[in-house]
Image 1 (cartoon, helix red, strand yellow):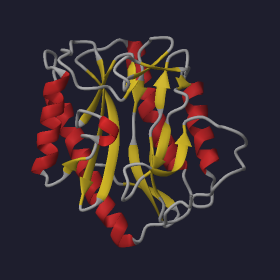
Image 2 (cartoon, rainbow, N blue to C red):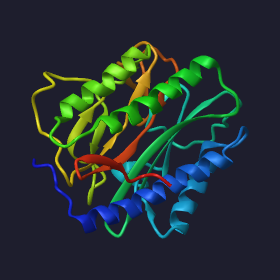
Image 3 (tube, rainbow, N blue to C red):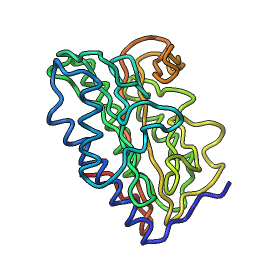
Length: 251
């Protein structure tokens, strides 16, 4: 399947959707505190999205029950909002998607709940740092596989490993589209499709401590590493404009 090239007016619509995602994540970061349940956080996120005139695109997507993926500690991605209470020292991943006028936005952060250990700070820093490092490295004409290698090299050099089998993705009038963008190199870096002006996609490094082998939990959504240690996840949606990546999901 061909990777879509978006026109400037489409990128503007994607940016409006993305800004709502960024504002929602910023809002949740300021109000999340120990003692809240994951359902409460999810409800606050959904209400905020709707107040901005958008729809929470994750709700009902592939059967997901929440509007915000709430991933705690060892859960790296796709955590389901439940009555679990977050406590001081937890590591909380928040992943949000919105739909606005037929176009999608998608981004994620991992935040410390109160004070966390230096090891957890390093883990979160790796996920965030690898994302921004990769975004800064993007230029028109490079291959997506080169981008995967940049992400993997950063994560490994920080002493962590990328989660396997899950990846970043294209986005536009669908929440998930071509191409798939793993956080590790498969094959050779000089193979596969090239990044072109007008492409819009999400990068989302998913970082584990010792093992990148994923384990799907009984809820059929939450994904951990087989090492059952803590994890971190960051994501931004970018558009390629004038040869460089422009972040669409900032508040």
